[in-house]
Structure formats: C-alpha cells, structure tokens
Length: 618
Image (cartoon, rainbow, N blue to C red; front, side):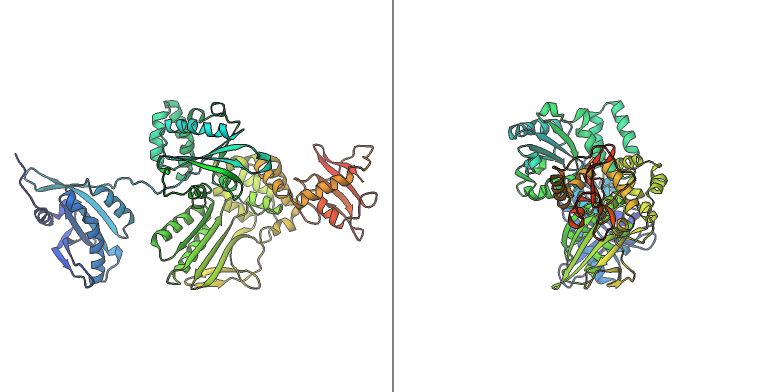
C-alpha cells in the first residue's frame, strides 16, 4: 500500500501532541513560536518546550534531505534569537534536531554537535505506513576526520649516496601502504655535519590516526598470537596518547618494518619530534625533497609546514610547542588551549599558570597577540645533570609574550630550588628500586613522567613563573586581570650544582656513562672552549717526558673546583697550584686561565683512562 503524503507540518503537530516520543517529561510551550529579530530575519521554532528540570527545549523538525540542509543554520539562529528575547544562558537551552532522512544531515550535524556552545541531541523519525511518526531513534554523530596531526613516532634511514636514498623511497612507500597507511611523508636530504658529509637520508613520518582506526588495521594484519601480545603491551599504558603512539609504530613496523637489507640503507634508527627538531634545525640538512603520499600530496600544504610539524612546533610533540595566536580568533584560541593541555599534561603547575596568562591576555580586550614557546620534558633528573654541565637543552622552560596596543609583556617559567640538600641515592631507592637502570627503564616506558612531580618535591624543586622587568625578573602570579609580584629570593635550579657539586656530579656520572645520547649531546656542547683548551693542553704535553711509573689519582673527584663543570666528559684533570699557593683539581680551561704551569709544586696533568685518572705530565 502506498504511503500517504505527509507534510513536515503534519509530522511537527503529531510530535508536539506526543512529546514522550522525543523524551519523557517534555512539556509543550508552543509550536511555530515566533522569535523577532531587529537586526535581520526572525525565526519560528517548530516546537518550543521545557524538559523535566525546567530547561528550555527547541525542537527543529525536517522531513527530507533537501530541507535538512537548512537545519544547522536555523538552530544557530534560534539560540541567538532566544538570547535576545530572554535573559538566558547557554546552559539554560537544549536543542533537539529531528529528521526523517539523515543522508545529507549526518556530517553537518556531527560538526555542529562538536562545536556548539550548548547542549544538542538528535533523532531519526520513524514513520509508519500512513506516514505517522511512531518512534524516534537517537542519532549518534558519525566520527569525523580529525585535523592534520603528524604522529610522534618517526623513523630515519641512512644511505651511502643520493641514488640509494632515491631508490628506497618507492620501496618504503610500498611497504608502509601494504599495512593500510595512506597519509605519510618521506623527506630525502643530505646532512651538512662534517661527520655525515656525503651521506643521504630518508625521514619517515605519518598522519596520526585514532586508536580505533589503528586497531582495525592491526587486527587485519596481525595473527591471533601477535594481536594478543600487542593488546597486552598497550594494556600497561595508562594514557591514550601512549597507546596511539605504540599502535602507530607497531602497524607499519610489523614483520620488521622496512629493514636496511631490503632498501640499500646502511643505518636505521627510531626518531621522534624532539630528534626531528634537531635533525631539521636551520642549516642541518640541504638538498631537501619532501616525498608526499595520500592527502599530504596537497599543493596548498607547504614543505616547510610539514617539516615544522615533524619538529613538533605545532603541538605534535608532547613536550615542545611554538605557537602564535590572536585573541580575537576563536579557532586559534581553541587550538592554543588544546596544545597547552597537551604539552603540560603532567605539569599541573605550569598548565594552570599558562591558562591564567592566556585569560589575562584575553581580558585586555581588542586583539592581543600571544606568542608561546614551551619545552616541558617531565624529566627533572636529566635536566639537573645537563644543567650541571652548563647545557640548558634538557631543562623545562616556557616563554609567553603578550603584545597589546604596542605594549609587550614577557613571562617565562623555569625550575626553582629551595636550597634543600639533594640526595640522589635516596631518590633512586624511593622511586626506582635503588638502581639507576630502573630509572632508564621507567624512561623507556614513560613511567618517569608521572613520578616527576614527586621527585621534584623530594629535591626541593618547583616550577617558577616570572615576569621580565628591570633591573631583574620578578616572580609573579596571576590574580584575575592583574599580575601580582610574589616576594622571596629567586634560586634557579642550576644553583643546586654550584652548592652541591659533588652530589650532583654523581648524577652527571650516571648519565654520561649510561645514556649515550645524553653523553654525545653534552660532549658536543662542551666541544667549544673546554675542547679547545684540552687540545691546547694536549699539544703542550706532547713533548713532555712521560712519568717513568704508571700512577693514578687516588680519591673521588667529580667536578672542576673552579668552574664546577663535571670531569666525566673531559679528557684531562689537573692537580694544580693556583696563584696564591692554593691547590685545586681543575679542568684544562681553568688551568690555562689561572694555573702556574706544569711541574713539581705547580701542576700535574692526569688523563682519563679505564682505570681512572692516569698521571701523564708534570
């Protein structure tokens, strides 16, 4: 039997008379309720009612896909017109969108529901053979494509020449696509560092998917045992971000990934935004070619934008951020807050203060500019060890600049120390089972991040916030629309190494002997004045007569008595007599600056060896 022609008005009237179809407890206020508008088009609410707790309810009804295209625009207009007519808040109103057909409406509704500042739900109207509504089924918004985000797990292959790297592009792409990944890039380049001269590289990064998307692909590609093993692996990861990262890596790296022997590569290593930040820093690579796949093959997406996002400067990294916004741009401000929550996920102190500073900038009115740069690694032990070596690269910090009407205010964050004597043996016992290897194992699985705050408290460290000013920075807090100075002496974290250099030296020794990446970074950093001084000292002792008997320094020394730089990365230690007759253990740089020369009563030079400091001159 043919269905009776029924109009949108007929459906509205039947639902208005049977509001229990929509929700228990709804009461009718009116149908076709008029909302005047002095500035433009007025509106008529299909159904205007109240729910069981007294909230106003707007019900918009559509019958066909053609009519449904107008529904979202009308809902936005109605909510605005209600605010103009009544003294209501966004939390006082609920919107319900009902339609018979949802083909054209599903995606716009999903976007609307995700961004609407008020509560909105939807339902599919079920009609009987006569065209009368008999049920309303809830609509679950479809999953929308997320905005472009490059995943945090990267990979890097090295090749002996350009031809080998170029040939591997297609091989890697074929391998990656085989497991269902479509959107990724391979960046071909030649490194400029002398040690890598002549070598070419391919850097791989992919668009991050949702966990459920990765899991669907993994279930297709993994055997039952492999799938069970992977699920057990991610079950130990408490944070969704870590589970997504592990899944993104596991999928394409399944069955060996793209091994060197198949590609013509001679090196392969794991990479990530922090490594990418250094790899693609200005001048580090040349002859760069960005090979794009899937939706990265976009003429409006610039190569440099892709590289910046690989470096993590757009919020892709979970510890690094560089972002600039205007306060009069809601999408920019929403993105800024989202990125701040990500980069300070484990750092409640700076998360709170930066959010307050953002609100402070918004309260200035007009269009203020906010520039934010963050490095928040949540690894204070590494930061202390690096700081003791004079290297700031591992130390958490942020810089936030607010510019409004030509006036610029600058705020920054840096760890403070309250003067408590550090005891790193106790730290390792209480947090890492008494063994430094427990710390590095925790770092591998990310468990150290949740412990970071407790470790800082045990060491007397806290996240300080300061405002730049004359004659010196001042500690501050945000109070409403005001910046309030906080009294008290400022003791930066690196002062701990100056006052307790022997104890901090133990920590430096652990990192220099256990963490190759840390040791390489510090040695490269120190490859300036200290390395030049050591080369000069090596030339000076080249013609010296070597001691007849092997002798080694007796006793435990960790840092230079003058500059407090750790001896662990250095080649030479000098037992020197300084001007004024004072004895000291010093580095080559300090010895050349204030020493009295080599020889009895002046200075004996010791060189690092496996057995300890060996006497080599003087």
